[in-house]
Image (cartoon, rainbow, N blue to C red; front, side, top):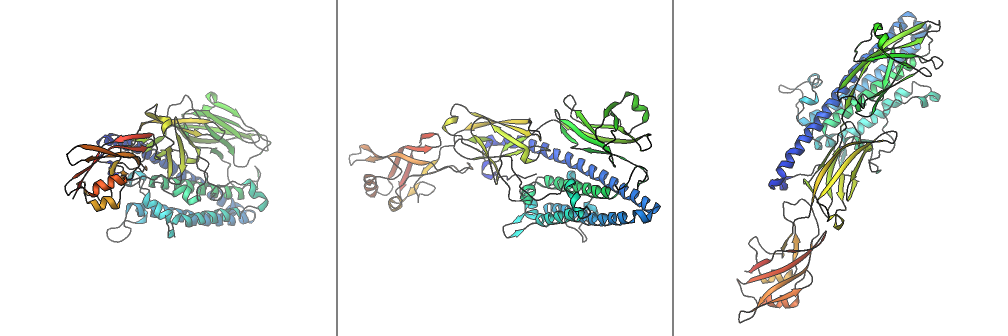
Length: 548
């Protein structure tokens, strides 16, 4: 997951009509942060369950070693090496996570007033104040121009850990192992553009809440990889010649976080799969632990090639967590049926997305309008933003909306819709946001050298004989407004006035002669000023200078 750059809004705070929008944006931000907390808590629970499952695997391995040391010893010794490698990597990964929190929160560790690392392990996202901070985590993990951050060392550690685990698998078998933890290859944004590298893709301008969630996801992948390698070392067995004291069911879900309308998908199988043996699964929703008496009213699924595919439609389910349990039934080599219970849970969530302008609560014609787009549980490369007019472009600093020129004069509104692309090519609408569309405010006109009271010397005017445009300070955008016509009001000796005209931004020679002859204290009036903007010419108020 990638983060988003937020442009400072100090100059815009003075505009009263932005206050309500800022408050609304804050509420949306809280919802997104709450979603990160929920997802992270789910990952923490998953990692705790995975730790228990991996520890159980080692326990069963040790039992078999104690029963038959001569036969099991080569496998057990390798499993202990895997355990040591995994322990060192996971300890390092957790240190990076805790140091990211320390760096962002400004926590003092050690000393009389500091806290211990053991205390940090008890901190959750709900305890952290700066979970929406992205600058400090980016500096720590990505680094600055002169030095690389901790994320690059983490990337190297991940690659080394992956290589070390795969070394336990014969080379001709490694193609069949997908243990994840892949930091190589191309990392593509939603618009097809490629990010700089794995570190930028995951941690550049990513808020602390997302950084912690990403690291917990890496932790889950690491534990899953450890389980797969140790499980492989234990698979050279038959049902009678098994290295463990029992066979356990395994449920492998594609995701435990599901949008309503999608399907919860999982594969349920015993650890030693026999492709010639088609198991049967019985399961019941709302049951945390299986009991054989549930069999009569359960849902039954027949497997294929040793695996049962479980698909649970969620279209008619309310957003919440669902639990279920069941058993998988398989024939032993003796012909007897043996069953192994399982249980699991998944969360159904409403599709949702957040779109907000990073500079103003409106879009302006003729300029790049930065926006932030995010959706809980959806990586950036799966987001597909659409706009009713103009276009959305992805840049190194995030998304911008532009091409809002003359072709938008018939409307004052723009709608952005966010879709999520599925792996099978499907699209799910996550949400939409309506923005007001306005013209840029009129620029002010000035002559270089004039002071705050519009006073200027003749020499200063004649040294810079041009009218130039400047947007008001509260407008946090840049656009090159250009003066293309104006007039100067001149006076004869008898007091009669007449106008001198220019068809550009430069004073004419006749205007310069008039100004050169003006007396101190005289007013120089420029009026009928026309400037060229993004949607055509516009007339702006007169400029009155006083000769000093």
